[in-house]
Every structure is written in structure tokens, then in C-alpha cells.
Length: 462
Image (cartoon, rainbow, N blue to C red):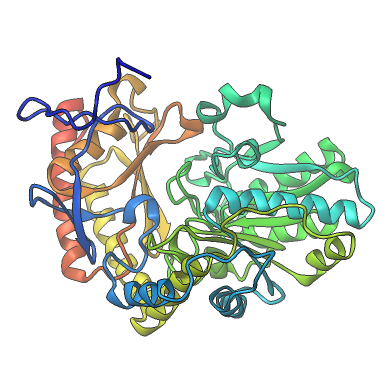
């Protein structure tokens, strides 16, 4: 019996956080949440916050949607769990059918998981088993970009270009080859953006040839950057050239749409903006919209059938195709259509982008604003001419996050450049956001930027 544990029921001194047995990324404490609706969250003291990041870009359709909650209750009255090897279930079958109808042509097979890391891991395992099943066992390398983020399991972390996250675990996993992320806005040369896009894409071919084409299995990329690159968008020329290179060398193209998918960018998938043709797609976050843990891998029968004939997909999770989670996902898709949320994401994204660029002209330390729809990022620097980063010790990204939080706005903020330096933030409110709420978000963010500039002696115009 442990006699030195502190019971969590002990009363803390008035004004101090109560003891907790939980631990996560950091030791800082936050208020206890009470309820949420639309783009707003209230803590137990009654204070309201704008969820300007949809959590970590999850709650696409907004909090407290009654139709989704009622659909989940109906499913709970029938069955909450049925193991996929014992039963098929109707919500999973219907969700797979509806997702396949929204995918790029040919991606007609779905595999359900509980989150983004599992989805990426599933993509890697599918690609590898397909190669073995089609007599290409020498193919195992998955080229990725640096920086990038694809998940926290050892498999997904091996294709995550972020030393700060992965360095401790290198002895436990296989490191994969990387190429630079297409941060063309930083380049100081005489090339056009189209030419820069082609140059970044050609780096993939150079890496494939360096590694040996016969050994390269796949290339994984986020069509629109996520946590590691703050909604980075490559020049348009990049996307088609990547597809050409993959085809030329028999390399599978995996799109990580965990953050950019499910309508957030104004199209169902981020890659749809360029009519990209991935071989495999990872999805999560927005397809469950925070109502249930849910993710999916989409692939073509061309890839799935050979490994099924070779003995089956040697992979799986207990909650794969869970009927309750899939019922939530079905209701989320229904609300997305009923409320025309993809169209709203495109329209409100334009308004938010315009307003954020207005702040950029006022605060020149915001060096770049980018993104699509309601996945919009910005990068902050110490010198807008040289793009020198703000000294890491100043913790600019964390300070901006805290200043916004104090004012009732939740944003997503993180370091880029592999997690070590380079400060960025993301605005990604739920897709139900209105124009008036966009203005409210920008107003609070502007006040926080004024405070940040004062604390860190950053330049301000006017």
C-alpha cells in the first residue's frame, strides 16, 4: 500500500490549483472546463473563451452540436462496441461508403482507427505490406519533409521531421530520409514562386536517387502544413511535380490530411485544391470533430487486394470501426452538408486571412501569413528584413498563446524549424464561425500582439 500519495480529494489552499494525478506535456495548470457550444467554451468559474484553434484543429463542426449528440445517444441505446473480427456494424459500413464518395477517384477502401498517429502508422504499414505482397521487399524507406509532424507513435514519429520530439527515441526506431519542407516564402533568389515550387519538388527526386529508387517505398507529406509548419502552402507547381516523380520511380504518395482534411480548408481534403492524386490518405481530427476518437486510412483496391490475397492486413486496433465512433462520424458528415460548412470555411477563411494580413501590416514582426480556408498560420521573426528568428529564450510563441488566453481567446502556437526555434501561431476556429466572430477573434489577437510587442521590443507600425 502506498502511504505517501497525495489524495486528489484534498482541498488546496484557496486560489491555488487543486492537486492532480494527471500529467501531460507541461506542468502548467488550466481551469476546469464546464461546457461548450459553437465556437465558445466556458470554465467552471463561468468565464468564456473563444476556441480559436478548434482544440488542436479538431472540432470542425463546433461544440455541442445536438444532432451529433442525439445520433450518438441512439447508437448507445443499441450497441457501443462490437469487435470487428466478430461482427460488421452498420455505422462503420455506411461511414466507409460516404467517405469513399468524397475521396479522390480510386480511393475506395477505408480502414478505421482512433486518431491521427494511428492513421499515419496504418498508411506506412499498408504501403510496406503491399510492397512485400507484390514482390518488392527491398522497398522500405519512407521519405518525409523537415520540418513536419505526422504523429507520436514510434512509427509515425520516424517520419516526423522534428528533432525536438524524436531525438530521445532514435535508438528505438528507424530514422527515415528527409527533404526540406517547401518554405519558398523564405527564399531570397531570382526565381519565381512557380520555379521555387519545382525546385523543392525536385529535391524529392534527388533524394530518391541518392537512397536508391529500388529501396524507396513512399513519400509522405501534408498538402497544407500542420503543427510543424503552421499551415505552410507550397507553390502550386509543387504538387503536380511531386506526383510525376512518385510515378516515375514507383513510389507511393501518402497524404497526411489529419489536420487539413474534413472540410477545414474549404475543400473536403486539402489536396483537393490542386486535384492531387495520392495513393493513400490519412485522416482524423475533423471527421470525428471531437465527439468521439476517430480516424481513417483511405486507399485503393489496387493496394489493398494484393495484401488481402497474401493473408490479410497484419495490423489493427481494438477500437477500429467502433460503432459509436462511426455513428458520430456519420452525423458529423451530415451536419457538414446540412450547414454547408465547407462553403462557410472557404468564405470565413478568406475574411480571416484578410484581417490577419491587416494585422501583419501593423505588426511587421509577423513575417508571413499563409494557409487555406480555416487553417491559417503566421510566422513571427525578430527582423522582417533578414527573417532572423526571435531568440528562443524569449518564448514568443508561448507568450502570445498566454496573452491571448488571458483575454479569452485560444490559439495554437508552436515552434517551427524542427521544434527548436522559429515562432508561429495558427488560427483555426470551428467551421461554424461567423463574420462577427472573426472580427472578435482578430480584435483580441490584435490586443495580445500589442502586449507581446511591448514585452519583447518588437516593431509596431502606427
